[in-house]
Length: 460
Image (cartoon, rainbow, N blue to C red; front, side):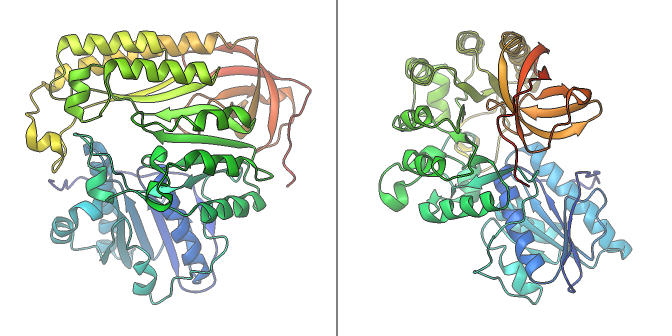
């Protein structure tokens, strides 16, 4: 991995929590929501230890900076490097005393990074970052309750139920970085949910690298259905949303649980990657075209109205023009409510990098990606338009300009469409649930009017 010397700007919302003594620390989180949960845990420990902590400050000004990195794909790695270099420049100028780096990038490239960026005072991977407290002259408090400072809006949070992944898809570096799947004990997860409910959290986005694998290591069975069933029974849990499932060996007992509880969102995030059987075989996905069609069909049949989010890849070695056409036809048939896509990029150490030639030209990859996303934009627009006139329950996230911005149960924070309600409609409360009528739509977002019927209001 070549280290870029460029410096990039990094600007995200500010959250300040004052400690007492100990100095000030900025934590900059990059990458996925799983990284964010680690940053939230570190924030709580640092505040308990007496530091004043800020998360993702608009301008980093603390005495100490911790960069929590992503090392998944090329763009994410470049962003992480740029932010580290930016903070290294602060240190060289004397406005930063200490610089620490943690997360996926340093887990994967520790030796190279230590050599190329000597400005960093301490490097930590995905799992040894609690040592940072010791290196700051403090101690990790195992009894700290609650164990996280929520950096999202106070009404929703992410719940990480496991680490690692036992799948070894050809293109994916995650198992190299994180190792084998390790489930958190069920009662520990449920206790965390109870603690967060007590703090006012109502919406829980359940995350894992592969949540359908949950429990196999601890309980010798797939226990995701049991976990979600118990989570849904906790008083105060208004929404549960499931992210990052895998189609092969899917635990079908999860679907009746979704149907049984009104507080489990009719939403499933499950990356399918492709549809052509030869490409799926090259990807080491252990599923065929026919099985994938049947899989989608069964989920839609057993959970009527469910919204499926998926991720697809174009340009994997072996993807012919005909295979790409199969993918387009699959998307036309499946009509995914939510879909993301990306072009294959070779990652060192993966099966693809070692066994396949990356022989599809970059311009071909990008042309395929653009064509696929244009198709999805049309489908998304049609799906959103069909909601005009319906009544939806929404949670209000924020005010932006002339609108309250909310989401339905079918919309995950930050990645999915939003619902815009005119501010002059009614005085609405951030973090509360309301019924709204959809009045219009565009390709992604919905516009709505408030209905004088409050479904749920927070008790803050």
